Image 1 (cartoon, one colour):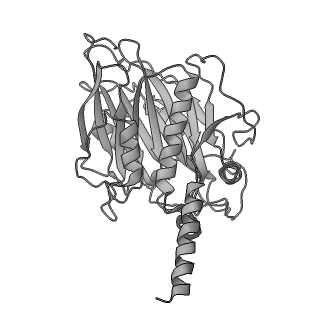
Image 2 (image 1 turned 135 degrees about the horizontal axis):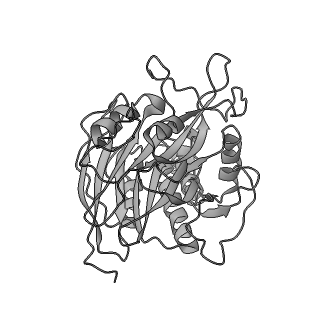
Image 3 (image 1 turned 120 degrees about the vertical axis):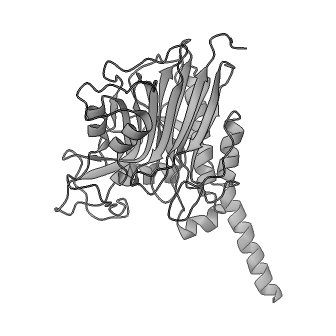
Length: 383
């Protein structure tokens, strides 16, 4: 290799390394005053807020992230938060376990009604909306949830509008995440990340994002607008109460599968690692602002190509009580380990994970879901 060429390669490598060091993942509190796409910010709250139903919002601090994410945000509708499930569901009480699931529904390709009926015993066709005998309280973390609404802004094709994902949703067009929550009687937090395609005039307007469905009340909703890579990704979080009153933060997240070629070269292919850092930082800031949760259960589609990826290593370091990966892939097309749960119990040694497994049926999605069981031991006390 000629010396001049080697020098240029070395300089290019140095430039990429320097650029990668500048791709930080600092998060900041944002103010969704008139719009959740607002560019305004504010410092952390002086006092800890209560378990409120007001949505708190954090976003990546870099100017590029803010600008791109705000443009994508302008194409979607408002978040939906309905904190209270229908009456009749069992509370999370002593002697009961919390059953949690994470599942990417492929923008409606996955059948949520069949999933809930088979995996939890919740038959949403029953007007009483009663959980079948046996299952206790449950939460379902949903990625690529979708919503159909005429209230969404009219948008045309642009770099801020991803292509349309149009899976087979059945003869009736499928039920969106809001309808699923209503028909099943579940509490709901849904925050859209992006539009599901531009307006073409031949199909309803849709957006898509992350959601939490729950049979127990939700409080303290939070949206985390993650560092922008190939597209906008917004993780969502809410709090549920353990039998002893401990707050347990539940988080649904979705990372990018890849960034653009230019950005991949400049960042050293730190796409998911940067989003992991951003989410970890956002959760830390939310904890600092209060109220303190201590216990956190985080599930989602991390689009990881290997179980040894940097993003997963950083998540496990931040969530030291997480179950080990079971060796099972969850994305059907290529058999990759993309879906995971992470857990940390903080100072509470009376909250622990007892079961963790991949589900055996995909229910029409291109992902298999995962199930985790959280146990509560009333005899133990915090350190």
